[in-house]
Image (cartoon, rainbow, N blue to C red; front, side, top):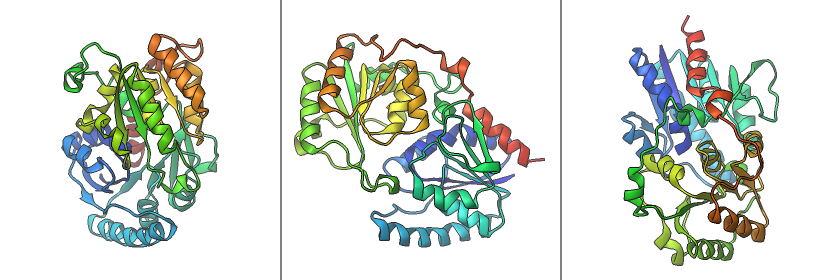
Length: 337
């Protein structure tokens, strides 16, 4: 088969990298189109995945509108030349719309209910929509659900083994350390939403640094006094850093989910709620908290005892939930008959 993927975010590389490797082993022809967002291109290169770039994207309503038109034309030309049998993405309007115009079936994966604009611009042009079963919307006959999380496409034990060398790279030895994540709030689903203030960020890092080492991962710029805490590692090592950390605190939902699935306590500081976040909160490793004083209190408790959970439920994720990559393979094989 000839298959095209659109990659719009670093997380999407992880979602599809194991599927890509399987498809290449079975002699399929693959084209990857990728946005130049954060470390997306670096992650693709580190996984030896060739790609063509569709640029950096844009901010603001009008900027995003003109980028949509320009990118649709770019993707349409790629599809016209490559002539794929199938296209896949994580809710990419560019690939979905271009596929629809070319009469190519598009499979859309998503787990982000509040990405309302992306959903409106993608779902009508997709043949199938694949979501976790705890997704809080229904897209009718084209909607297929699975028992799991997008993150288990790469964090399932079949695909991931932690590497303790990360502790040497971070220079932490057996010390406690905390990963903190700040987001840029420039995504279309972030319009009107704001995270921690600069003053809160400074207070948060100062509070944690008195109890443990701190490493900051950030989409945008950070206050100058916090730059010494910036995490400088290969993007491919991020999951190892999360696995061995004592705690994750951040505005990013993907890193919060990854931490919880790696059984590292996670405090999610974001008012945007999603079905998969709500599901993970049931199992003792993730908590959504918006009150700043309560955030500091939770940090204090967890750093005193990492084994403290937010509730009493424990779970074996691999036994209870699907390997998402295996699910993807099954879906594609249906189109290869």
